[in-house]
Length: 218
Image (cartoon, rainbow, N blue to C red; front, top):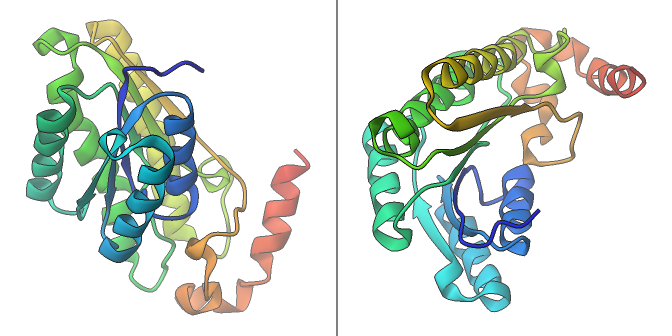
């Protein structure tokens, strides 16, 4: 996977899957703007990456994907430093059935928001150079997880949105490829204190591991 000269933006980049995506992009020659709400972890990761890839290869931006203005500003700063955006990885996400409205806001609404704002710079129909948008879904976007219905709904939404945008891009000639990634259970901070985040479904906390195992066997 040769990505020399490509510019990527990764949301939720400071830890977990987002961190792994960032490292993989850099390993393959891309330059990356790391967006995250955790300033401490984001700046620490950038310092570590600078030692490996040089400080000009990355840009950390403290950014809340729930804020349209912060996303717009992050894209503008990325363009100011790197000159273009070729890849967007909508990775930021949470699992919280208690604060379910926030789960919808971050997991689904923000994916739509970031996608539409990125297309302003990437869409060939409006002067962009095309590119790739990768949306992080989940195995819960393919089959329901009974202990986290709202999380499941958001990930089904991400899969559906990605499919529809891919069709729209092909039909209208955006020049942007859309992909959804549906990983299984990954031991990241998303699963920390899981039972406390399940709300009324806390008694089903043990079902998550069973669900993950069943999906892996399919």
